[in-house]
Amino acid sequence: MNYISTRDKNVKLTGAQAILQGLSRDGGLLLPDAFPTLDLEEIGQLAPLSYPMRSAQIMKLFLEEFSIGELAKFTQEAYGKSKFDDGDAAPVIQVNDAVALGEATYFMELWHGPTSAFKDVALQMLPRLLSASLTKTGEERDVCILVATSGDTGKAALEGFCDVDRTKIMVFYPRDGVSDIQKLQMMTQEGGNVGVCSVLGNFDDAQTGVKRIFSDEAFRDELDANGYFLSSANSINWGRLLPQIVYYFSAYCDLVNSGIVEPGDKINFCVPTGNFGNILAGYFAMKMGLPVNKFICASNSNDVLADFIKTGTYDRRREFFATTSPSMDILISSNLERLLFDLSSNDDALIAQYMKSLNDDGAYTVDAELLRKLQAIFECGSVSDERVANIIKSVFAQCNYLMDTHTAVAYGAYSDYRRESGDDTPTVVLSTASPYKFAEAVIDALGGNATGDGFELIDALEAIEGKAAPAPLKALRGKPVRFKDETEKDAMLGVVKGML
Image 1: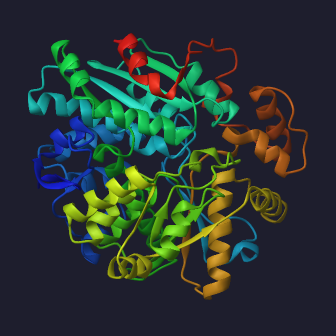
Image 2 (image 1 turned 90 degrees about the horizontal axis):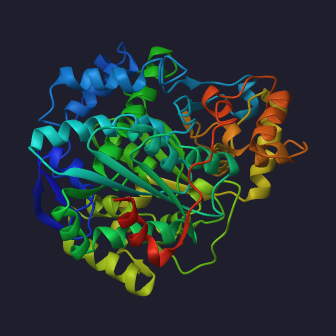
């Protein structure tokens, strides 16, 4: 299996090379030149396995240089009890009084890892894959990992790469675009190889700045002379996206094991997404043979993706909203490029044209046939902050189930889809973060007193829910703040140079 670029399919890399490089040198994203497939019998063989073993089996299909033994070792380390507080890592649950939510509604909780967000599923694996790839490729340079985060990726990447040999990692986040708890998680990060800096701008500014650094040939030469090369822990890196494919298969296996669906029955997934990586992993699972009816793409008020799915025009020239679901406050969805490449039968020239139009003009429009293919698979919806608050309050009152703001966006979009379509297909709503990461917004939604610092808010939410907050969040109390630097968006390169 080779890995090719969305902007030049003549680029050919091995899996290990793709993981190390992160982003293609032409600015495109890397993905397999062909996808492995699983039939129903092979999917059924995954059902009795643990989550780590499901992961090893699926990732092996994409990583020819890795043995099943070493992948199993990595997945046991990544998803074991020392990292995840739930033995299933990504449990699928049906809440109390399911009739109130729809009897066919299930939540896959992806926030049981060390940073209480779904990014842990990928970012506990990526450091292991990357370190092994250094050896497999014979790479003698060390790696400098750059990350732009809208909140959750940053801490998960810092935690995953903390003190990993032969790596340095620098995370950029929008200064006023993350929750207090997300900010504290990053500012207090331990490790001798880590750096954190806020950007005076939004996530798109941070992401654009990181991409600009990747495309700076002079800086790459400078790094090379000093024994380093650049890579990424964002979902532009295939090694970030690959582990996420697993939990779509795992959710299906859990529903089969519970007798909720029969093997071969189709299900829906509703995914809150801003950068389109999480939902794209689901699409790739379907491409591999997972029985899926629809993907519902859930947006907040920054509804550029929902508009695109409805109209075929991607237009980032719109007002940017700072919402209560900040991890989705994104107007440039990088991973959409991979989907368009696949739906256009790997037409790299067309994708390069679309991305140039997006960069130069701020918009592009896909052709009618590509839009038809898109709409055959994806539904969409957007949910306002006001409605998010109402959903959090009503679901907690009816079902005693507390969800975070991003999960509420997804549930709202799914509710609209179900009402308008009449589709009663069993549906898995991806719950992407603990409500305690966004305690202020959740307490506000519940009508509580959302005053005080992040720790006081966690205490207040514990009192409301009657449960303990995740241990990693409670452990932030008393940790010293290490990183207070901020930078203009055009000065990010200097910050990276300063770290090295």
